[in-house]
Image 1 (tube, rainbow, N blue to C red):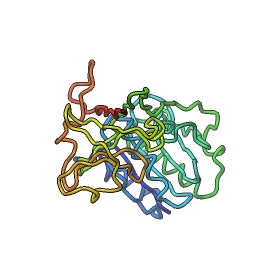
Image 2 (cartoon, helix red, strand yellow):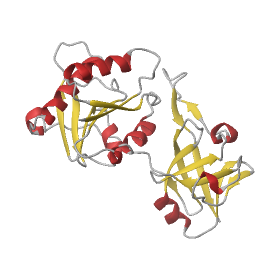
Image 3 (cartoon, rainbow, N blue to C red):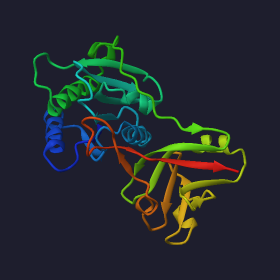
Length: 271
């Protein structure tokens, strides 16, 4: 059985290994596939983008352990979800509706044992035990509370006017390519066959859509729609984000100092 594992734990301590130990301890039959453990803490947009795009690569009835922002609230349960033939286990923190763009096909609340000390290894064991019940053929409504009112958050939408469309940067990958939450459909609907400029700096812009990186010479900037259908800004064999100052900004307010929470926005102007 395939089990994908995604988290915001990073790789600097024991947490990822500890959770994997819990998984194997409870079911040696799971083949664990790490998606990433470098989701930026508290960045729901990036988490939703990454998670929503992994499921199509997996066969039906694969399992997905998603441990992101697990302490976003102090609820007494976790979520077991079935959607599109996939089974997910995660915190009830609104991420599921951001990923799916709405409510899942099925969702039940899995109680956290009363009086237990909450922690990621405990949460993982609760979810893996729920996965084991699903694998055994037990119905969802027998595993948890189907009457749960799940927490909901919405994926941030683009801002559109007649003159431009403004998108939120979802993530910057390891090649420093910049992924924006503007889909091809939104872009074409706003463009209406008009010339456009994707503005990167005051006098720096991109005015055509490429097919892939090799459409331009080495060191040249480009924009294209990636496999997930979102606008991507890159430099062929270069690093777009630092070159154009497209990066993260720090959250404002008490307790947010030093946290990399959000990315900047990108505007596409139409002529």
